[in-house]
Amino acid sequence: MKKHNFSAGPAILPAVVLEQAAQAAADFNGMGLSILEISHRSPEFSAVLDEAHGLVRELLNLDESYEAIFLQGGASSQFFMTAMNLLDENSKAAYVDTGTWSAKAIKEAELFGGIEIIASSKDKNYSYIPKEYSVSKDTAYLHITSNNTIFGTQYDTFPDIEVPLVADMSSDIFSRPIDASRFGLIYAGAQKNMGPAGAVLVIVKKSMLDKVNRTIPTMLNYQTHIKKGSAFNTPPVFPIYVSMLTMRWVKENGGVEGMQKHNETKAALIYGEIDRNPMFRGTVIDPVDRSKMNVTFIMAEGKEDLEGQFMEMCNEANCVGVKGHRSVGGFRASIYNAMPLESVQVLVDVMKRFEEKYG
Ligand SMILES: *Cc1c(COP(=O)(O)O)cnc(C)c1O
Image 1 (tube, helix red, strand yellow):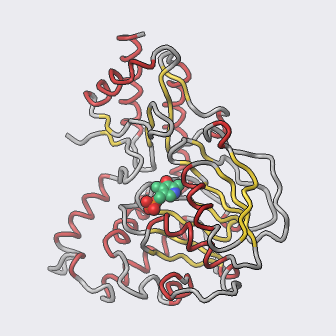
Image 2 (cartoon, rainbow, N blue to C red):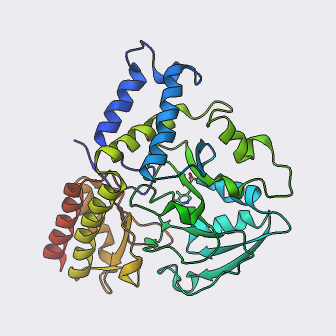
Image 3 (cartoon, protein in one colour):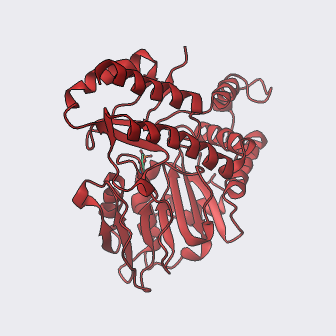
């Protein structure tokens, strides 16, 4: 029996995408060859790359001033690659610290330019999104983490500032419409909401590039990959293919507007239960900051020693991956695009039965 997969990442993919991926691994488009054993420069794979790039542009409504590329090295390599390509000793960038991933991005960016942490929610274990700050005009960019996978917070609206935004959207890319024109650069590791591990998507406004006084190694220069359409060297063929299939699925299911509606319905169902059920409480202070991708919650006060019993009931109901990250504790239900409403309902029913049994 297929389980209800609430894992934070690598994470759930649409069932139909997994079937198509399995088919392509056996025989790609009736070629008599697996997609895993054909040239990345074959016409068949070039068509995949073209479609993948095209779908990114279409889903996010990107105009000609933007480029989209697929790279390797995960979102973690983008922590330094962004700064290496966009900053030098004569420029500075501002960062908002909203948790583990932001902190890692800050640490790496500091190797390449002046970094100012203009706001942080560290004082309350990253349980909110800071909102009151300003950025001086001579800042190259403001870096944010749009969805904090570990702490369960998400920007509901993006900072209203004059400098370009650089955003780590690893865990909420394609989950809702965005106004791309406010972003100078967006990056997203595939394995949360877009596909399997092994590829990272980078969207960059061309005018952001070629401004730094630094020689950048060929493989780490965005221009290298832009000029060669993500195929300067052998790209991660299978992760790009499966990401393309997932983007097709997003398009067929109402695009990012459709995803947003579906994600809001799922989030309302589970947060409603967390708020109603006296056995649990949410970890995010202001409801507006609650992530619609990663729902974090803990046992209500005095019930902490029942954690194991709840996990056991989740497992019995085939709900897996509900355990919280060690830095928050408790539980985390990741309800990415591919998560069906029915699976969220199964988890909510477990929460209700848990209350009946132990409440
Ligand atoms: C998972 C995650 C990362 C790290 O991604 P890798 O691909 O493992 O390097 C970075 N940022 C966010 C927001 C994440 O959720």
